[in-house]
Amino acid sequence: MCIRLLPALTLSLAVLAATAATAQTVNPLAAEVDARVEKALPDIVEWRRDFHQHPELGNREFRTAKVIAAHLERLGLEVQTGVAHTGVVGLLKGGKPGPVVALRADMDGLPVTEQVDLPFKSTQKAMWGGQEVGVMHACGHDNHMAILLGVAEVLAPMRDRIPGSIKFIFQPAEEGPPEGEEGGAALMVKEGVLENPAVDAIFGLHVFPMHAGTIQYRSGPMMASADSFTIRVRGRQTHGAVPWGGVDPIVIGAQIVTSLQTIVSRYVNITEAPAVVTIGAFNGGNRFNIVPDEVVMEGTVRAFNETVRADIHRRIRAIAGSTAEASGGSVEVSFGIGYPSTINDPALTERMVPTLRRVAGAADVSVGPLTGTAEDFSVFQQQVPGMFFFLGVTPRDRDAATAPSNHSPLFFADESALPVGVRALANLALDYLHGQ
Image (cartoon, rainbow, N blue to C red; front, side, top):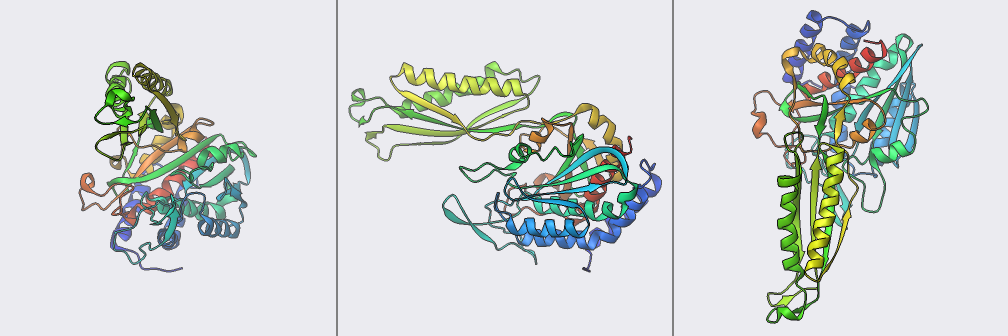
């Protein structure tokens, strides 16, 4: 395919070439990777635009999976389809013995109606939560898939000189599966994606509202765990004029909300790792003078430590239960499918950061702050050493601090970041396999 490159994209290639010329080459294939990335870039951009224009929701990425599988098969990879419903896994076996490294990209879009005016704007519709919604790659997964396909395109012709194997994991339902279904990284692990052959290390990236082509990483905890929870308070209905004739679940619920604020403020050592407990929905009653039978609250927990996470869950149950019991009511507390904290393996991160600096330039690689957002890449990291990083996609002439964030209908990704992402993942894999 041949398309016209944006000026920023052409400039990015020139900068990357200059960086490659002055940087120390670690693996013997690095220079060839740069040349192949430049050659493949028009196709990478075209793939990204195609994915962007045809987003699909979690566990429903049927068209997306077909496009990915077909290209991996054309490259001669061993391809598995239908993994965790719609996931695709490609195995590139190198011509020399060595370890196994995995690279992961997520596939699903979000139930968001796009408001960005692009020639390849999404106009897709789908059913979500019982209603028709717009669908958009508002989190940038279209970029992730195009980047990983680009890595496969670049490395497949070099397989005879690669020591070891590379697994390309295209994962569905990162944003969460539909209600009542399994999905995402957890189901991929359950179905053996990290086995046969066993993976020694895994790398992944996520586009983020930072200046295009910049990279942020962090050793240890990087992104929070994320859990949703529901608290269902049951009282006893009565007339609002005679509240003593019943048990008021609204008052009980209000007391629970207030008491939950003490979990972080009094029981979490925030000097070691922050945490969040938020109630985002409080629903009960339908008339001003009727005390209802029931109140339902929904919230989220964010943490960066699994011990703290478990303790917060315990305290939510204890506070809700004791508060309801003290007032003559009852309560049910349930937690939804959660993601653990994204924790980069410290030894692996220290070993591979020089690769990121070589690829993007030291000035454009930095240690990022903790972020309360979450990623189920963390599930892979619980099984094997992993490293995850952010790739900036905000145009350099814009203030990244005010750019629309991921999940916004106005989220926009500058394509000049694509070659940086391809080079980063390709070189991380090769440097790791070459023992650097």
